[in-house]
Structures are given as C-alpha cells and as structure tokens.
Length: 449
Ligand SMILES: C=C(O[C@@H]1C=C(C(=O)O)C=C[C@H]1O)C(=O)O
Ligand SMILES: [Mg+2]
Image (cartoon, rainbow, N blue to C red; front, side):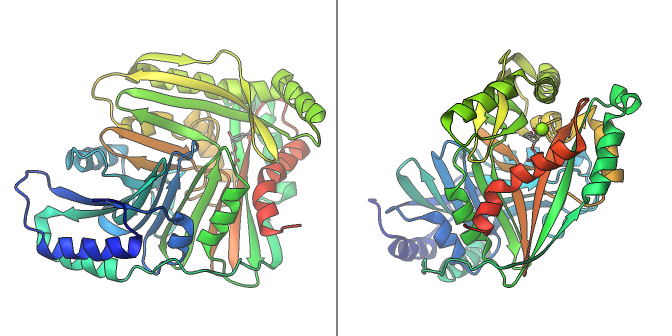
C-alpha cells in the first residue's frame, strides 16, 4: 500500500482491526504497519491528549519515534534486584522475533533509592501506537497482544479514535519567577573539598557531583513544545522524552551514548572533560587544544575509558578503545571523547550490558559503589531519571543514551540537572562554573535574548 496521510491511515487501520482474524502464528504479539506521508513528530505529540507519550531521536537523526499508549509494559516501582530485571527482560524479549517491536523506557540513576513517581526504578513500554521515521520514510505502527485479541481490538480502536491531528500551538511564553539550587554553592564547596581530599581521593578517585536547579514559572509548559525548541539548538545529541501523566514529563537533549548494539556489535564511548566554546574559530581551537592538554580533564575521561573497557571485557570477544581523545563540540561547550567498539560474546543480552555499563564513571564515579554511596548520602536531592539510562531495545538492536542535559517538567515549574566529574585537581568554583556552562543551552531556550 502506498503512503497515505495520517488521518486516512488511522481510518484504514481501524477498518483492518475490525476485520482482523486471529493469525495462525505462535507469536504472542502482532504489529500492524502502514506507510505515511511525512509529518513532523514533536508537534503531533504535543497535540495529543493520551498517556504515556514517548519521544526518541537518535544522535545521527536517522531515526525518530513518537509513541502513545501501552500495549505491554514492565514497571518496577519498588525494590527490584538486577536478577529480577534480567529475568523480566529475557521474558519480554523472548515474546517476539519481530525486529520492529521496540520497548522504550529507562532506568533510574540509582535503583537503590526511592524512585520518582510514575517513572519508577525502571520502566519500559511497548507502545500501542507509534509513528516511526527511518530516513525519509514514516510509518504508523500498532502493537497488539494476541493472547487477548478481543479486548486488544477494542482498546486499540479507542486509542486510535482519541488521537488528535496536529494543531498549531502558540510558542510557550516563559516567565522565570525564581530559582533554587540543591546543593547550593557553599555546600558544593564542602562536597568538592571532601571528594578531592587526598585520603578520600586515594580510595575514590572520581565522584560525579551534581545539582538540581528548580525554576518557578508563571505558567505551565508543554514539555513537547519545549523539547522541540531545545532540539533545534542541540545538534549532536540524542533527544528524548517520557510522560506518563499530566503531572510530570522528563525531557533530554543528551550528547552521551551509553551504547548502541546491532546484534553482537557494540558501540559505546567515554565522554567526559569539559570546556567552553570560543567566541571565534581561533579561540575555539585554542580552548580545544587546552582541553586536550589539561591533566584534570584527561583524568576525568581516562577513568571512564578504563572502567568501560574493564567492565566490558568479560562480556566480549573483543574490546577496542581510542588511545587518545578527540573533541566533541556542542553549541556552548566542548568535551573530550573516546569511541569504544566491542564484539559481544554469544548470548549476552541488553540487561547484562546495562548492568555492566550503567552508571559509568561519566555520571557516577569510581569505584562505582563507593561513589554511589557518597552521592546517596551527601548530594541532598534525588536524581530520579537524571543520569539514568534511556532508550529502546529489541532482539536485534538497541540504543541507550545517558540522560544528562535533562529536565523534569511539572506544573508551573521546571527542574534542570547538571553534574561535573570531581577528580584530584578539581576546584570548587571552576566546577560550579562548569555546571552553569552545561545549563547554557537549555537556559538560552528558556530565556531567549
Ligand atoms: C554529569 C554530566 O556530564 C558529564 C560530566 C562531564 C564533565 O565533568 O566534564 C562531561 C560530560 C559528562 O560525562 C552532566 O552534564 O550532568
Ligand atoms: Mg568536568
């Protein structure tokens, strides 16, 4: 069938559903798919009224998805062991061999602490409806659980009927009424001093300390319109968002890949070490040179590289990491970057990868448990999904980003997050300034000149 406009495709799909007979298959899940004429996805998502709403765009921009509703999900609200997560993950994955079925979701930064409501310690959704762009082609996908076809048919028709066409919406008017930081600057100084104290640093060479910045607003923000604006100023980044109710949405434009897997081929990276962009090309190149030559920043990146390579070792036949870092440029800052490639051993699954890689010392620290313990006890706020792992998986491939450069949007307020790797040689004032630099892009979107 040739590509059709969304409104027409929805009618076609409803008709298909009414006529659908139980297919003669052992597959428990069925995915229906129709070609669509191109349509921008974020404005469509911003116009919807159902939950959850999910958005994902990979860093290379080749693929983009907007999803509504739930066909199946795994939600871990209370204590969950890695063993339970692994088992549930295996069950889910075994459910289908269709490479187009994707579970989207995320893991909290620290699964030992009280989770954000609705987001939980881990939550993955097989959406009911998904618009998925691959290159220039757009498809409408609908997922059904065949073990209960009749109720699924009803519920799918209801979801399709309640979808809204994209309607134009006014650019959000943003008035910032107030700001509060946790930790504040004096507490930050104490924390950096504790972590850089030689006795502590010897045992725990890196802790990524972070801060939440809560902005009070005069009105509610549509998180999807905000993400659309933020995305325009964030090339070179993953762009994603999850919203399970009107109460809160988590959105991110993150430069950092946790990993991308295609069958047994794995791509990951060490992204750590930061400086500003220059005012002109000469100054920009000078700052990049200084970043490459700087001991403190090199240490930040080297520790991440080393840890990833060591942790992947037992799961892989081959792991190769770039010896020297290169520069990764973002609109307001530049980072040190090392690409890492690996070939997985047979039978290694995504959950084992998440367990091995997340949180990397780019957002947690080294050794992992000691650094997490320090963050849990001292940081003073709950990170929730900030610095968690967000992405999607299916049997064939998966991709996860580290949810930094992220924000939690709630009624009349937005909470921003930023962290900095504290190692020997870190200075409290310079690291505090690094937090501000990491917020520069989202601040320029919230407070345009
Ligand atoms: C923790 C964050 O970023 C991490 C810390 C960096 C650093 O300290 O140089 C750089 C990139 C990320 O590894 C964040 O942006 O919140
Ligand atoms: Mg840093």
